[in-house]
Length: 112
Image (cartoon, rainbow, N blue to C red; front, top):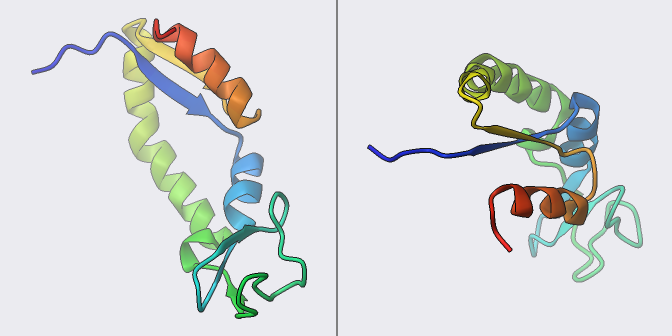
């Protein structure tokens, strides 16, 4: 087996995950992705590129996200706790922006 020195757990609040995942929409025709908060279409419900209808995948709907979170916490948190108890866990606040999170993760792994 492989030896694991460190494990990174990017912890994101349920509220933030619901906003991030629940805001995702796709064009039915050209599959261009949109996000209602960070990259919305110019005209609600219509693709900027081809004028196609936007839709939300079942995986990005609130009830599905909540179920995915329930499964995650049931199956993954015990693993997180295991590595925490081994003093190998690096826990990062994922509620922040991508650049901020990356700036914390990279040095903690010894990467320059």
